[in-house]
Image 1 (cartoon, rainbow, N blue to C red):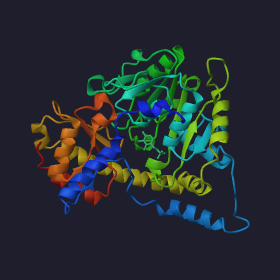
Image 2: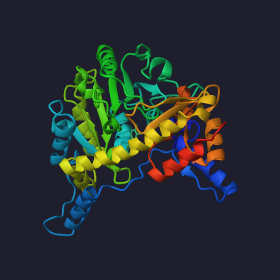
Image 3: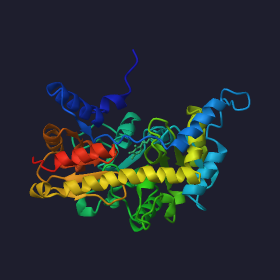
Image 4: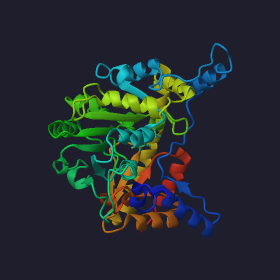
Length: 407
Ligand SMILES: *Cc1c(COP(=O)(O)O)cnc(C)c1O
């Protein structure tokens, strides 16, 4: 018989969100009439702006005509969209042929591991978006879980004590470094000075940074960098992953992009851009043309304004949640609230408590679903993440219930 991919046998425990869903179901079966509000999973809730939906609808109807029909497109994406992304998000620093359009950021994170194979060393922020670690384990780039993390992965704690920027001196030479800013789950955004340190370290130590900027459009502080490519020296050590999911509500539509600069090289001097082009043309067959029509609409004047409106809505929810967790009842629990105003996540520490304990208590007493911080890595223990993705009236109701919560 065929042997199981060892990566799968190395994977431990369930993925975080299925466990959250299981506890929610369990609560519901005991309290069938409970009206549960979910501020857990980072899934968008607000309708697409009409303007953007109409662009996709028009394109779809066009497909039913001789003039409007198209089959396979370029695997790297529509030239017009690649150029528009470069122009809007990376003016003067990235060219259209360095942009690769995809079916989303998570899928790119999975595919990118084929570039580096099983022997690559991996470093991640702790806590972090689970796919960096779980994907590395499945790809065979990490070993067994020792209880404090997987062998072969360097965990870099990001905590209030270090202002959520890790000690990068712990990273081994020639590592792949996953870095997410604004961060999921902590909401922290790294400054230009911090990212410059990271880029200098990567260049000096043969590392490549995989920079996940999925929440860049939530950044409202103009001094904070929205892309790794705003940092000098980044073109020789960085790849950026991004997505229309969070800014445009394309979580179901599916559209993302990656940036691989032409200067980026492997140890033997060969081009990473060339191999990534090969991965995208060989293993991927191009993003949906309907979704790409939607992406183009997102990036003209009207679309950009519409996207900003949706993000403003979520940021307002986030403020409400922040104020609730800063209330007197939470002060009595010594809860510490971290929110910068530049992300949809509020990160709250309950000193001396376990994340799942706080999760269960909030679910039980307030019928509100959050996400336990420990699910994002060992350094997330004692924290919970509250997501601002939700209808305003639900967020208001959740905040009302939380206002007299006690553990
Ligand atoms: C939601 C999320 C993604 C996933 O994006 P898709 O394009 O929907 O696959 C990627 N990175 C982070 C950090 C996310 O939170």
